Length: 277
Image (tube, rainbow, N blue to C red; front, side, top):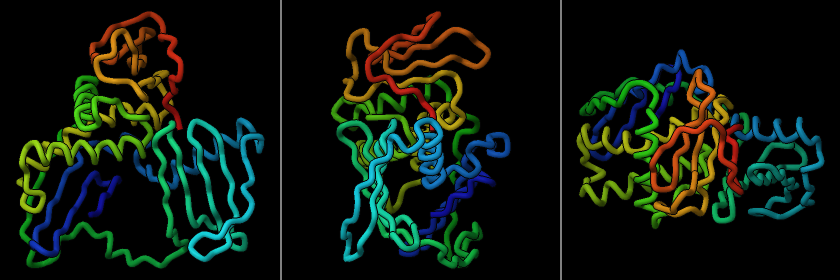
């Protein structure tokens, strides 16, 4: 699968069935500068850079050396909004393994990185090979609304034992999005190998609501906060998300029962995390 953020298009090829699915992402990425080059590595760079600028090396812990997959690597841990551990080759200083801990329950290990690998540009072509049957998928246009964000939050609770996502960072929402789609595939009895364009569009719509919060995360605006970690759907009088709509000095507060109330000031909730990279 290839996603071209600049053109707002995606292409998925299934060699076994010889089907090609072309998707219009439905967003004007030329106007959304912050999404153009959004990727895992840039997010990591921004997070580390922000930590170093604010605290210098005070929040960096040296972990010494460790043998990982037969290689002697040097480790460092950055403690911030997220705990990031990097194991790097001491000679090249290239990251070999990156570990990310979000909250108390979510831990990612990403490894087998290679640096400066020659890549054939044709591998990223959106041209469909000969012999493939084409399926067009039309996705919603424009940024998701607050109502769509709430719908996605509700779906996330349905597939995660009634609990809200541990965080609204890009990795967490990607993980929960996959859970939502697996849940819907089962409940809608969709054949993943033979899904129709409408079914694929519905699966995508179900998780696009997260982009409502992701835009605030990336742009670091609207004083958006999330306090839904370890909170169950329906918890009484518990704010889980709040933000200032553009051009307003008021706040919109989403509660754990998914009702929304306006407020003159932000609530005070233990453990609330401001959305920013």
